[in-house]
Every structure is written in C-alpha cells, then in structure tokens.
Length: 254
Length: 201
Image (cartoon, rainbow over all chains, first blue to last red; front, side, top):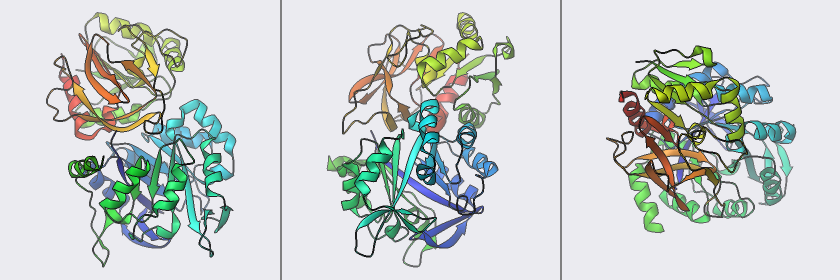
C-alpha cells in the first residue's frame, strides 16, 4: 500500500485561494486550471473544498464540481455546503469519489449514518479541524462560530469514528499555510484513537514530515501551500514531488 | 464499435464515461435492458456499493440476462470493482448468488492496525498469464477501494496484488474481464488499460 500525498485546493466563490491559519485568503488562480495541472502531474488524489459555501449558507456549486470531476483522472474528494442526502447523492453522481463532511457532524449525524448505509463508508470522510487554545492545549475547532466544539480531541475522534465514516481528514488550523512542519504529537494522539485511515493536513514542510507521518501510521498527508507556493516570497507555482523518488525514500525507511 | 455502461443506480459511471472519452469513445448509458442493442460491442459493469444490492439492481433491470447474452456472443465485457465481484459466485458480504462467470467467491479482508479495511489507495499489481488488459503498462499501479477480495487461486487471474495477503486484482476469461481496482481513476495506467480493453475485438 502506498502512502498518499494529496493536494488540498480551496475555492472561495469560484476563485482558487490559499489561507493562513484559516484566514487571510490569497488569490492564487482558477480552480479548473489548477486541477488540470495537478491531473497532468498525476497526483495520488485531490481534495477540493468550497470554503465559502457553509459560511454563506449556500448549496454546493454543482456545475463547478462537475467540471472539476471531469478533469480528475484520479480520486477526487469534495467538501463544502453539504447538508442533505440529495447533496451527497448528486455529488457522487457527478464523478466525485468521496464526500467530506465537517459541520454536518454537529448538525445531523442521522444523515451521515444513513449515507454510510446506502453508499458505503468508503465514500464519507470526516473533516476535523483542531486548534490550540491560549493555554496551548488542542481542541476541536469550529471555523464558522470561531469557537471550540470540544476540548477532548481523542474523545471527539472516537465519536467521529463511530458514525460510519471511512476516513478522517485532520486539519491543524494553527499550522495552515505556515509550511513550518507538521505537529506530529497531536497526529500521533489521533492515530491512536481511531482505526480509520488518517490524512493529516497543516504545516507540511518536507519529506521528513512525510516519513514521520508514515511511521506514525497515517495513510496520507495533505497540503495546500506546499504544492502551490515556491520560495520565501510565496510565488505561485504548482508543483508535486516525484512519486518514484518519494516511494524510494519511504521504502528506505521501512 | 460501441461502448456501453450499465447504469444500475449508485455507481461511478460518470468517471468511467470520462476516461472512456479520453481514450477516444463516447460511451452510452444503459438504464434498463431495453437500452441494449446488438450494435454494442463493448460492455462495462461499473459498480460500487454492497454485493446484494448490486446483484438485485442488475436483476431488477434485466441486466443479468444482457450480461450472459453479451458473453455468449464472445463480445468484450469488463466488470470494475463491485462489477468484477458480481461476475463471481458470491461474496461473504451478502447472501445472493453472483452471475458465476468465474468460480470462487469473495472474502473479507481481516483488518489490522497496519492493513486497514477497506483497502483504499494506490497499489502495485503483478501481471500474470500474459494479461491482455495489462499489456504495455510499465510497473502497473492502480487505485483500489474495497473490503472484499477474490482469492489469488482464481483460475483466470491475470494479475495479483499484495495487501496483507496476495489476492486476484484482475481476471481474464476469454473476452470477459474483471478488475478490482478503478482504472477510471488511475491516470495513465487506467487509461492504457481501458484502451487495451476497447482495442479487443
């Protein structure tokens, strides 16, 4: 089984943007164009998040999702503004492999349990955002209300793992866009509290991070800035590591 | 040359359609048995979901007969993921019999901390028995999502994959093909595989 390296793309009202700590969005281009480039680079998978849909309380942009899915000849996960069974059904039918749910976990777990029965758990990804409080302790963060959902990260992970999801996408808000290294301690605490595959996101700096995550038992890593920006001036240039090289480096570690 | 995709409800049909288009063919969707016609040369059974619901959906719409009819004329047929498993005798996942094109039935992976279930992600396959589908693919690797697998002992196995145990990742019986992975989501590897499939006469 190969470790998965997954770019996360953020869409804000049709624009491709990149955030820092879930704020300060910078415009980085056109989403469809970026998806085409990532497809050409043969990325393992792609995560596409509409970060405005839930904030503005509007439906997923089905036209954009369909256009993006038609350019993805690799697995595509979509998240943003999904509130109903119909949304899930429609998005899967457009050619999306996995549905990412975040706010729905705290709004309506019955939809999640039902969707898991009908479509199968492998199509549902739980997105969990974590952030340190002023004491330096991690909690589960709600980016909509800018408040903590829970101060017990392992407990929340256990709860989420019982709902019928097939994967957990863990996003570290404090590390978002910083490229200063993944906080492995919290990732380790999460891995220990779930049997589900875990994708860690937030702060990816280099291949050492990837090696460490694999050792911890993560199934993959995701990042935005790491694949979008180059150099200290954060010039926009989409890149993706050479997979053969990465696989060789990871094997040396085994 | 006419490629048709069986549309039996929940499935990854749109993704398969997109990849077939990239290969160079506009595929049609079959919503029930009446949509099938004798000009259809290549038939694909995409599929995701559970085994019993997959078989039920095929039977309700009369697709089981279409599949047998297509195979009896030695026309190329490809089952993808659940679509492959439906061509076997059955699965531990359900109670209903499969279409029994190949003998053997599907078993469940035993989960462990290292080998989580479902088997989800990219993995290499080892071609065997001079596979037609895997021709001209260097170091073939594909995207998998499945919890049940077909034994490596299947007589018609055309590739094997290793995930805690060796299992049959594809089979080829005359012009009937099955792949456990998702060629439609496997970049150039899946492109070449579907090209090889559509090249089969």
